[in-house]
Image 1 (cartoon, rainbow, N blue to C red):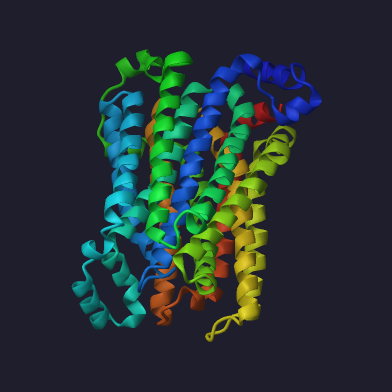
Image 2 (cartoon, rainbow, N blue to C red; image 1 turned 90 degrees about the vertical axis):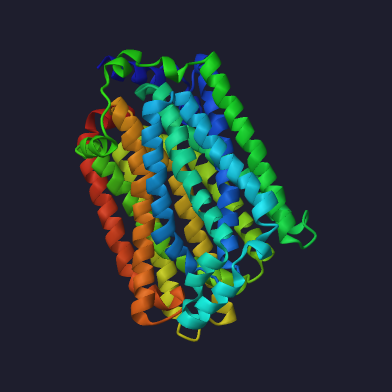
Length: 496
């Protein structure tokens, strides 16, 4: 009850009405909050660059297309996500929290630097062209997107690492760090504002992506890659420096809960995960993550297929993605400032958690309605194609904006009352594997439908995906309702 009283007094007494809505941070908390906000800005800035680049590399490569994305997410990415989770859980028993953070961050920055300046410039030399052509002749042209994953293996590896940046660096490293240094009371005020940093990062990355695709490359996409991977490397160094500063000046995560660490017995990873998932809270959080990933990816892959028809050149495709990223950041920033925190404080955790599936469901319905009206096996007319691209972009912008401003903060708040092991290993399992399982699940469904229908394009199976999206959203809402029961004391505290 004391924690509830503290938060209530801070929210309603210490701040003016407008400051409570826009900036409910005490002056003494700025030393902790501002560096965390900057780290969130930087990791989201990198994620936006990587997200636009990975899609461009796969969708516009020779013999590839949006059809390759479900194969990568459904097969390759989930394997690497499981390996990353195993490695993280193992190293968490061997390394300090700070060394664990630096180790994973360094691995990512090293790879993206090597890709930009070695792997991509040498792509023709590194591509197994002869064996790839032989596979296409054997499998048939309708299955060349399968072969493209092998032909452009370095692009596929980039796609995997870019996907893992969101799961490992943002969800596990950043949010894990925030959960370790923030109390529940601070989280109720900090976390929705962290979305401002995230959205500002998305906004800042949009013009860079567009400029690197049009102004800075002279029509050479290889130079675009070098510009963006340089930005990723420099940003990674800044993230490490901010993390170091927080641990040196504010709170050292390795000095926390030392008694618990001394008493903790070493257990096998499999046994630890079994114990962790006996926690109903972790199960419901995992269900929320899976539901979101399933629903979003069902629509997103079809939209990216229409986007390739409208923008077949890599530079044009990536430039449009830059515009989408910029628009996403702007909308998400407005939601964070005027909707997210106020919705949380006025109506509580439950209402804030339900808002994302509601928005995603409405925009998905809009997109699929247009699909049913305008697509046939011959494709879209030029006018309807452009409309489909724009409607899909609106869906993507709305869903990602809601994720940054409401879904992520509400999900992360659910971790705070959990035990230390659940925050570290359980969070790694949920954010690396459950998230991947959701994306992979949608990919398996799409790949299976393509094979069963005997078609070479994901556009031809759109009519079967709408019911799948509805089921995924209902599954997600069910998890939120169940989590409400687990999270009731904290939900009431946040709403106070």
